[in-house]
Image 1 (cartoon, helix red, strand yellow):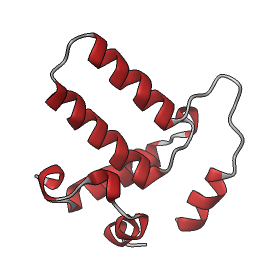
Image 2: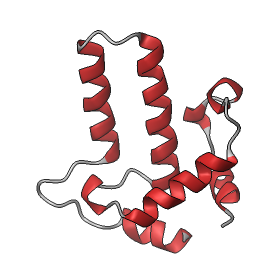
Image 3: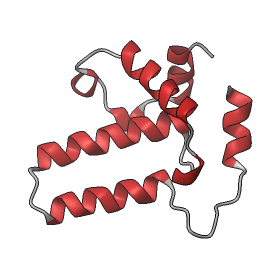
Length: 102
């Protein structure tokens, strides 16, 4: 699984593609402009950071069903209140690989 992650990072972006970080930025910006509470926006931001930490900052059009399953497996192994316990932006990729069993 690690090798597929590394190979995927090297894939060129398609012309009409958007990366997970770009999508996250646009989504969070739209929620901010719509007047959502900062706490809600922070929750979405934490989720995107975790998603990018697990799958990498890949192009959205390259995501597969298997990627979704892998992310759900990680979520199931984390404590319910993971955001309160740790700062998701500082999650080490090695910890995520340990959680996923790689």
